[in-house]
Length: 119
Image (cartoon, helix red, strand yellow):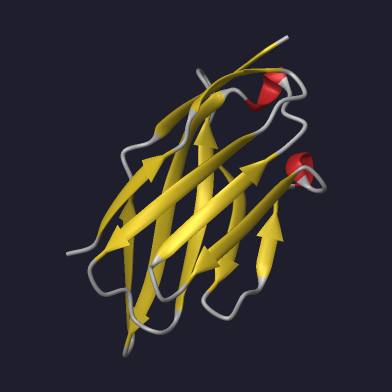
């Protein structure tokens, strides 16, 4: 069973930076995608950024140029560097990992970490 633990959330003023970390315990195989999602009050959870085990990345348009996702495969860690934060980035941020073993797809979520950006 894979468990994800996020850290690094907090409160910052607009224009500030935060770095989120996600630690995955357990086996997630060689082919997987680690991603960050966020959910603001009253809104649906949305993808912020994702990175494959091969290093390919994908970003939501709203964060392109401001956020950077990275990972350390040896440590099963994923990171989200968030710069130039805006009040609309305020949300609970969740780490997610999807991995494939043979033909079966698995998925796990972290507990979430709050990010609050004040104007």
